[in-house]
Image (cartoon, rainbow, N blue to C red; front, side, top):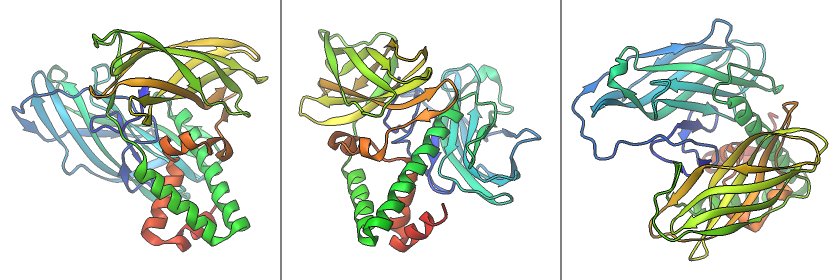
Length: 389
């Protein structure tokens, strides 16, 4: 289970826009890295690092900057502040649409791994682009200090939807979903412009800006294993938003609730398609005692679900909210499906045009990029950007 809140201590960052700006992962998946609370810094070291790109990689290193990066000794570990800016060149013959880098401080230690992902790229062969990251990682002192951080290439997604890389972080899956969302959203905006004109496109961009400003933000943590809340527990049933064209339908679901914690969600899903499903994600919307709703987490499930069959999804994890929050209700929806042949399904714009989803679900990285172009450069710049695809 993955928290949907952007945290200062997280598994990495996502850059939206041509690889030049790092932003929080409000709309994209993020695993949590624990913070050593209350620790004091007993020393600081410069951050020895290594960048490892395979000889046949479709990108090559032009330059790198690590200004502001440091290693602080706290207890028995180094707390690493990794602030990196890489300049990469597309050394392949295809256009690059996404890239993910693995950032490793220690392979097996908790909090020792992170990632930097850049969706919504369009880098031609021979062009250079930048990738920036701001991460906080942990490394045991016993592991030594040379190198403290290693940057590896996990994957590159091309414009023809082919992929290069070891995919240890399952970045192919994430970047494929981002790319499908980008194509869906660009098509929507281009159609809106062609059929309804400039004013309608501008109205939609302004509405997206407004929704983003009004989107509720809540403190939530993902906790593995048994929850620690001592309040009396009770079961709360999931309500579901069902999409008519979705290949998988949520049938039933329940989670244990104790005050400000929700744990051990149990879900039943049915594959109504003619293909085998090997992975899906379900968005988890929570309603508090004041009637406020927010997207709290994403429930991932690896499976082998044959056509026309059902399966149960179990998660041994808990969501912990602000102590003043009391959970009153939950809603789930299928956010993506991967089939055994490697193809994907994502919701259409029509299916996402639900009042609850529009209010609580952040837009795709591509919509965020286009909205930022509008905010900084105006409508004509967005129209010119849409013409590139």
